[in-house]
Image (tube, rainbow over all chains, first blue to last red; front, side):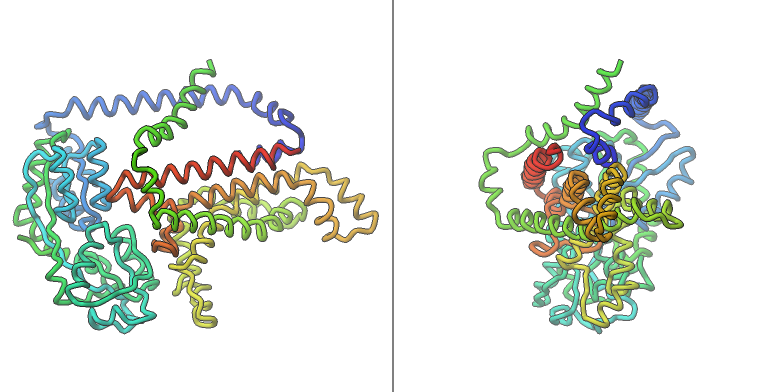
Amino acid sequence: MSHQMAGRSPGGPGGPGVRAVRARLPRRASAAAALSLLLAAGCGDTGDGGSGGSGSGSGGTLTVFAAASLTESFTALGKSFESSHAGVKVRFNFGGSSTLAQQIAQGAPADVFAAASPATMKPVSDGGDAAGPPRVFARNRLVIAVPKDDPGKVKAVSDLSRPGLKVVLCAERVPCGAAAETALAAAGVKVAPASREQDVKAVLTKVRLGEADAGLVYRSDARSASPQVKGIEFAESAKAVNDYPITVLKKAPKAALAGEFVKLVLSPQGRTALTGAGFETP
Amino acid sequence: MLVAPALVGLAFLVLPLVGLLVRAPWSTLGTRLGEPQVLEALRLSLVSATLATGLCLLLGVPLAWLLARVPFPGARLVRALVTVPLVLPPVVGGVALLLVLGRKGLVGGWLDAAFGITLPFTTAGVVLAETFVAMPFLVISVEGALRAADLRYEEAAATLGATRWTAFRRVTLPLVAPGVAAGAILCWARALGEFGATITFAGNFPGRTQTMPLAVYLALETDPQAAIVLSLVLLAVSVAVLAALRDRWVNAT
């Protein structure tokens, strides 16, 4: 587009540009046809999802919205769910819990929502989008993540206030950021962060690449990035333990399957997967 | 035959903007706009987009000249490489910048060791990220203008004794000024809206690296109303500037 604009201006408006457009007309018409096909296909798809709605059908796709920190453990659980339910596909949408809650409130077609904090679950259950009361299935606490060569020589939470040390935290408004504020306040440590990242995985990336000397992430995240990232436990993180609630959504296209997936997460097998990933379970 | 899809296309482009306007919290707009964080993000956005455009002009115009005027082996490959940031997801661009200019990066490691300069988490990092994604717009635009410009003027200047640099400065550049202006405007608009490379490379800190698009995204996490207000500001600023500049520069010929 920029090319055309620049090319046309010296020749005056409507010179070579117009001829080029005329020559391309048939192609545009076929593009329009392709677009309408695409739209039709899109409609058909949603229609299908709706008709399979009430749910005890054997096949179909289960859509799970889950907090970014659950990426590893839920992906593993999803695989095992697929192998025990023939023909079922589990599709995950991992992201910041509050973004996911927003998407659900705006009508995103999800079956299950697993959030990283009760605060981000609240708008969903208060808004009448949850099929039942959310249940806590995991707990996570913060650790100090440092690159494996530990360039900032961080040993304890008090080191984080050292001037010149590049510390990265989550934004105050996302659950890991709120937990970081609470834990740092409990430790009496004042930190001037270099950046407030949009979610916990972004903090982890900055540490993993060695751009940050330290960051506060969940224990499960530090474990997932081992051995490039070392997790240092600190006692004050006990003041900011995050509960992870899960619920089936009221408008779930696959309500029955959704219930079974939640059951799997709460089962001993689910607990094993979660503790293996660094979570504590209730 | 063509009018119907044209109207659908128009509606598709315009309706989301209408949605923003309809859902805007008009009654509290004034107080929300006055919040220091909004003004800070807006100031940072305008400053960094303008600096990035300047940097693009400084580096991009000579690059466009090279591609348009100097035949060299591998020119096609270079042209393709120049346009890569256009198709690259900006987040990938941000990661690539980290790997090169980050503290542990190929060039960044040397910058840190030799001069103590680190770019991530700084406003300079924001400008670099924006320059990376926006420069192709300028290069393509200026190169197109250079190719369309009549070579005979430059040749005439050369026969009258002008050096290559004088001919470029006094003849070529004025000739392609509309193309340069159009490119600079596109470049500025792209830099203003830059999100992925910025948040990946420069991080997010109010007043230092939090530009408007980052503020919109973060606000969406908790306060969608604030995000709408911020989006409206960005929309108003870009529409105003694009309209003003296009009338003045692009249609001037």
